[in-house]
Image: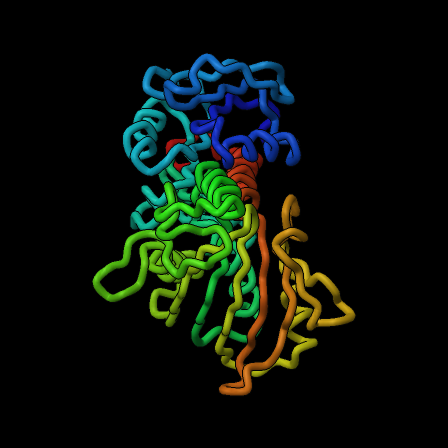
Length: 344
């Protein structure tokens, strides 16, 4: 255990995830000695109250990462590609919440409860997985360890905050306009207008008909579980919910389980919680999941097609799906004394 306190920089500090990173640093009692808030020039100069005092937001383009121990990035892929290597060169450990480095062969893609041991072997950039992937792999890892997983099919119901604060604003703006009879023809953020509708597209479609988000889920799941040959298919849908992603997951198992056995396995997994242990058909909703650090599980049942498992999971995409997972990685790295080595 390292007793000294850390100099932490939050890059993208004024965004939806950045704000939650500050909250999670406090909630997990991370030993912050100095906190710097970094964002675009539009936010530079803004004063933000934090648990460590008032911080003035600094311009990312001008920020000096010298003496920073940990840099938490959530300012978009372009910013990460440009600034993360600079932060590493200055000596910081970067935990990146974008897709910039997730599938790089030399960088760990970490959900601490699933593959936290890989933090020890990473270079000084550690990738935070996609929000929709994180909540699913918690459940998959539990089942894979217990009986083995043969395949995965998932359909997601992803909130508008998955597109950041601008995604939430688009939902609210479009809803107000629709109620006034002025529904816009196009969304400013989402693939289609989102108010009172569901949109089965997140990111551009690729040549095989799957979207960018779907490809992220499929590739990241295999990497995190160290199962490169695991069959995974995904359909990702944006829904008119402000916060929390929901998913229905179909899992093929190498050994059949009863519903009660499956519920017990899932509930024992750190970070997962079966919401009603007396009723496996009880279910959480997005509103119930908001602000909860756990990923919530319900509607556990046997698939009559192949005796696999079907279940419903809900997780706060701004917390476990982003900020919380990143800060948990920071805690694991810091607490294991890995910060003084270039082998972090």
